Length: 133
Image 1 (cartoon, rainbow, N blue to C red):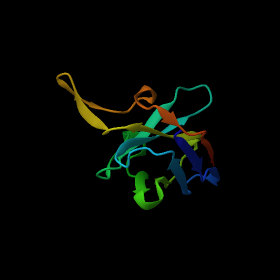
Image 2 (cartoon, rainbow, N blue to C red):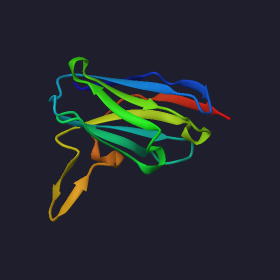
Image 3 (tube, rainbow, N blue to C red):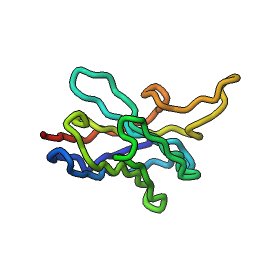
Image 4 (cartoon, one colour):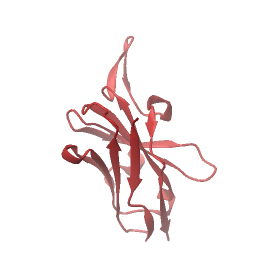
């Protein structure tokens, strides 16, 4: 049984920083695609970024590029989301997610990059991030 447990959320003022952690247990293959998502009240869950643990390849969405970064500690099966220069619009519940295989792959004639919630099978319970102005 795969379990993902997030931690590190909290309340900060605009411009501040937080680092979220996600510990994975339950025997997933060490090379997997993991993602960070967020969901604000009344909005759909949106992707923040992904990392392929096999190579360390990462990708983040444009809205957080230059402010957020994803990293991993393979020895401890832990994923991180470093969030700097936080803005009030970053306020949301943050989730980590995981699925087997790479983050990018050929799907027919298209090269697909996992970015949707439906692309991931395993989810954590979430950690709240609140940014005040």
